[in-house]
Length: 104
Image (cartoon, rainbow, N blue to C red):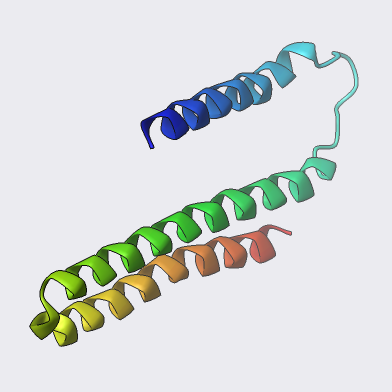
């Protein structure tokens, strides 16, 4: 798991460097219209939000399953907390989608 996290942090560092380096290569003179990048940014934002929500939901379900396996009598409380937590996690992706629709 640690090697995966290190690899992902390296990938994110390279992506961040690429995105921050783009203005350095911009040409001066005429004003550029940035509306063509809105779709790219929207797609990237939704991809990141969906990936984060998917990872969060997977971890929550795994932890709830492990908790129920260790203490089956606490199933009702764990299940309630799991469903509320999954709803909050899923709402993050829905908020991102809503913001994308508003911006476009």
